Image (cartoon, rainbow, N blue to C red; front, top):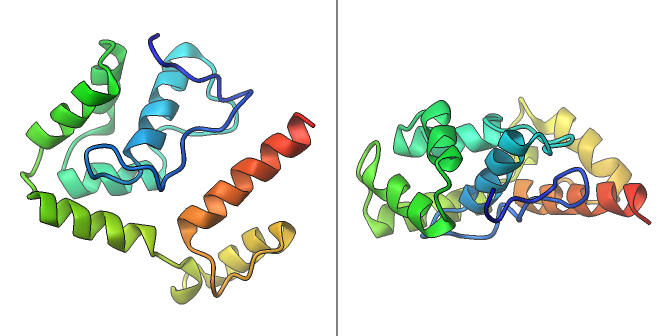
Length: 148
């Protein structure tokens, strides 16, 4: 599959990376392609993070996967996202992306304990760490250990 990453050997793109203004989208595409290729490793497509994107646009994860399976490029997947589900203005997409990028699970009482546990082995300050920064650090740590 075109542009498919082997997620048993490398991490997906950062959730910070924006495609068509959408955070998460590049990472979700990488996981979808790897899922179709049987090379998703420890990652999961249609996970809660992916569902934040799907929910924002009111699109279905299975339909998204079908679009990826059809071999669509990143650019065509951005177009599909823009044209599918609930229409969003560029400003709405930017605001949503900015909000997610700044999200700190530590500030959510229901997620605080879990996030503290996740940050501890990575020597991150959970009160100052965003979800996306934790994901990046976790990806780096996973592949540093697995592939010294």
